[in-house]
Image (tube, rainbow, N blue to C red; front, side, top):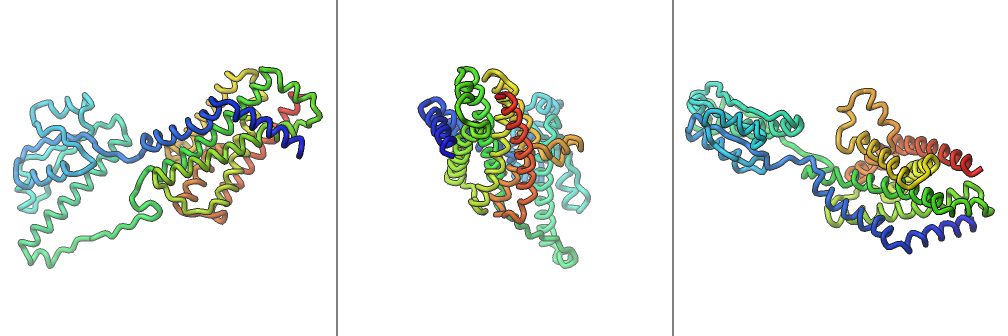
Length: 375
């Protein structure tokens, strides 16, 4: 252990003496967390809507007011000139168009079935689906309020009709803030970058400048060299995660309901995986540039298959099977469950054992390759 400690101290000294490395490790991730915390969001607001009112009644104007006084839509025009709707949708000036037909108000007053035409720009299917959901919600509320007013003027009708009044309650994220969902994912990505990328670059850098060969002629076994090269970056990973979590709690007000010791234990299993990948990359490349490109290949693949941007359930079946080998998938799920639900090992043990299996296999393979390259 004394030999390993001397090597760990040497690695830590080498990192801390380089101001640029310290900025990369601590300053850059905080900037990324701040920017991505605001930029990456599933909330869709301020959608441009074009409303064409062919009725011009008090009821249709009331409906238009409901679309105007909401954070979901920005009304851009009420023009009904020929071709305006098509031109706005084609040019991307509006995501959704609403056409209120003639006699809309009369149909409501006479209790006929009113119709409204809703046109969507389906280029972005997710945005279009969300916009349609917002639109349907506003129209449903409008019809309920209008019918309630009609029944108020006709007490006999009011006694025979009863509306369903849902009572909604959202657990774990009552305000439905997407930042609570995104920040744990961003922290996972930052931890992956720090541990995997820096580990691979540090070992390859030793190769390029020739100091790795000097280590190999010392009375240190391969396992001791690997421990001495990886422990400093594991410590940096824990420090990085702690700083990022503190920033997320204080700045973005993200709650941490779960146990911090459990989080530390599960983070250690994830770091085992990323450190193993860093060592493995260093055994198959010869330059830092190659290590950088290969590390980015793994990281981009992990991020896209982790469910961070796209739900895994929406992926093809063969792609879902591949995600089981993605350690980032499990760690993002762990952080979200711990942060918002306070889940413990009784719930997260499948993710923990999956990470242990992946990490153990990768670290063993990387160690064997490193030992082979050094003999």
